[in-house]
Image 1 (cartoon, rainbow, N blue to C red):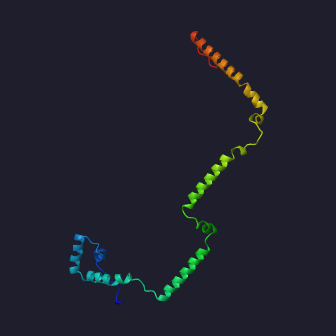
Image 2 (cartoon, helix red, strand yellow):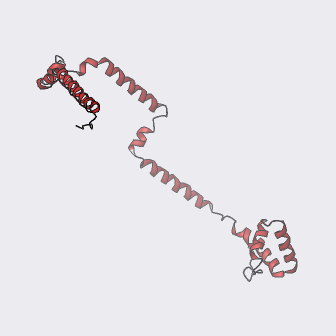
Image 3 (cartoon, helix red, strand yellow):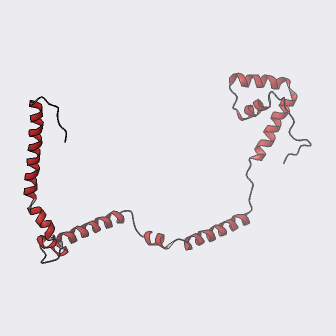
Length: 178
């Protein structure tokens, strides 16, 4: 490793950010020309750029791990995976054997069984021997038999109302409201 007695040397404040961009190649044409022109005459900026070239590659170098680290890492990973597998809920283990096509197939089979059951047991769901008339109370049956009478009464009331309205119009009087 290269050691310097002093840390990174300072650059001109106006050019420090531009020198970093210049190092990474992110300066456009005119800006790049301006930085290169400045570097020809400024020793501190040239040193700063040289320090960037020296220190930045050292900072991004990955650390080397010993083989013992990787062996321990592998063993620990295996233990964690085994613990996760043991902690898996029972319902996940139950459904892990199902394939994607089994869910629609089971759904279709259940619908088919339900349809066949309802079709072939149609008469079994009603109690035998009970007629509809026996289930309806006598009072309600009596009212329904008098329904024609009530409809005729409504018709007569409507005719009376029409005669009243027509009578007031032809007589020139005001219309009565009921």
